[in-house]
Length: 79
Image 1: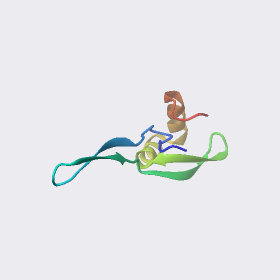
Image 2 (image 1 turned 120 degrees about the vertical axis):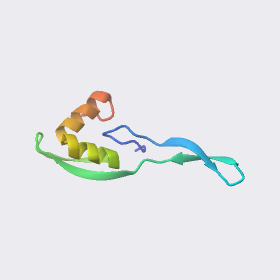
Image 3 (image 1 turned 90 degrees about the horizontal axis):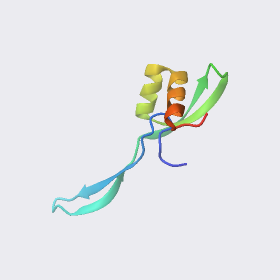
Image 4 (image 1 turned 45 degrees about the horizontal axis):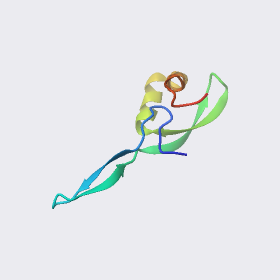
């Protein structure tokens, strides 16, 4: 599975390492992703999501059901 958060849609960005002599080499800025299991009360089931730290804060703020519905509406998650 790719490095994309299933709640916020965040993904790896590209950029450059810049040395002291100002040489630029390509690098990627990866997302802080981890796999976490949640109990979805409305569906009475456990689900496993690949989420970022920002996605976890979104779930804590809005609730799991609202976050999943919003992510599905935006196309980040297929329900």
